[in-house]
Image (tube, rainbow, N blue to C red; front, side, top):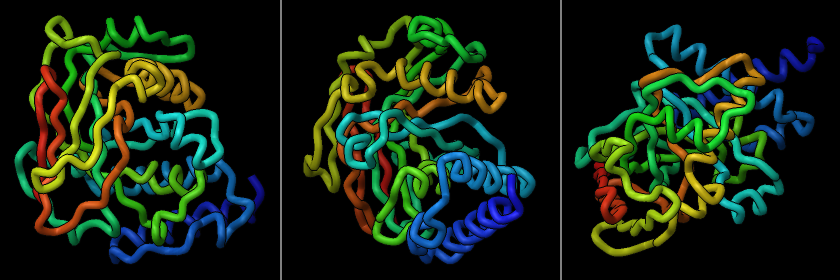
Length: 263
């Protein structure tokens, strides 16, 4: 890595940290540094995760983003991306979260996986995932962008921890009793009114395929998925904005429901 590239990564990471701390979004990183590439972006993400770990946080899993074809087409990419989930990002089902902790929060309904056994790529298949999973849960991911007005490219969102900011999980269902994960429908409501509907088929055809992609992609970074890790497999609908005084709820049929209120 050249000194200029190292300096670019360091400055980008610091810019995002300050944006999150001050709740003041910044211009797209790719506007400030047009040559910021995907390798830079993942390095920026890892730098900020490492700083949070040094401050006492713990990685509890990962999120997979850009799993729907329309979103990949929008950003002109051909594969998903990933971010890290930390223990201080978890919120209680049915609980409250302060809207002021985010820059521009949105919510996405997703199926969350919890592992009983490790997954190490390359070569992880959907069957490997389904064998390794202990249980699944209905979930809401709180996404946020430290980039002003959500004007993101792939490198911008990857550097920004794949725009991840929070996780709310409903009740866990053991895999032996889970519905067909390729055929789960969801209704997303805000303040009791339906705002979006979707299907697990939007998530790479099957949400377990997103987990397999993650395990195989992490292998290139010398990492894997550990027992107890949770994985958000990808949005099943669009992601509406949410703010103070509003409640988001996602209903996943037989898989259950999950909700959170913003204050």
